[in-house]
Image: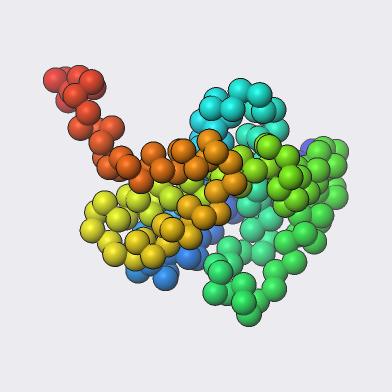
Length: 188
């Protein structure tokens, strides 16, 4: 029992080393799957605050584990997915099978993929908004590639809250929080 849990933790740790592959097409930027999952979870938390009627815990759990199977399949970008088929569902099933709480994880994966519940739609939006934050930061620092990606990412948002937040990301400079006068930097 404890061995399966420890194996899961080591498997999750691998995501710290696994780069997200889409940045190659941008010509700039990089992040690991773990970094992406962290930001998705933070965005999920924000969306849960904007939608107090949702099951916050379920939403955060979905955000946290949504890419966990990539420890087995790797991160395939949209071009690679035209030629390489990763059996993500099998990877998720195999990942869950030895865990006492594997059914719970399997249910989270299934709900996320079905994208029918409000929590799943918000988790998908969190996934896209995390990417949008990266694209906006790259755009604001002079990179041209994000201009082509941003409309596609916006089109994948499901919820009104996600669309509002996505538009807010685009309407704000990535470093505005740092230069905002409400923060006292006299001690810096």
